[in-house]
Image (tube, rainbow, N blue to C red; front, side):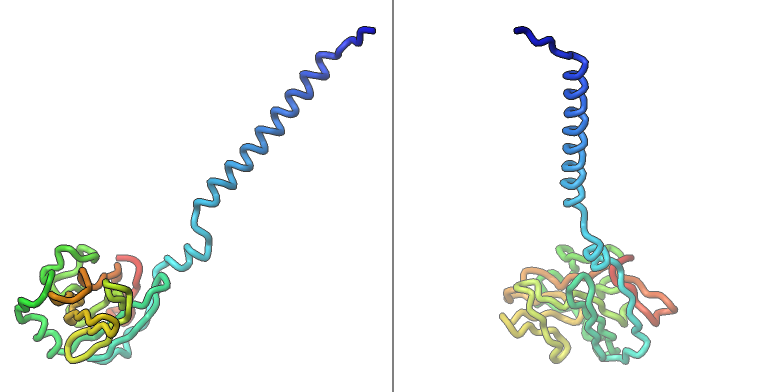
Length: 180
């Protein structure tokens, strides 16, 4: 007994399955590509942050957070600034040629000499150095940095402290970290 096949019905089912498979592949591809994009939480974390520095007195240091990392804002005194202007042969990279910093920062590694802004993490193992006698000293392995974040020769830290992108607003009363 020979059963006559309905070719139009078979073609319809094949086309429907092809469309369904295409939709499934597109949905999977969309989800795959979307997984590469940063989440909203990550985007908020990377966004620039603004801090009021109007109450920061000369000699004071403020630790703030940006991208989950501590950042220092040090208002340098005249004594600190004069100490930085003296040539120091003990520095590894005195001209900051191998440093991670925005190109706009000057010799003092800051946009405005009075304010020093840098990462508060030692470039050796990420410990937090402390301000002691006109230098930053890392308590973990003894790395030392001057008040411009330049590393001293003969210590474990391989390079100067990192300078994040930043700029001042409100006539220098606030600072925005995370954008130039």
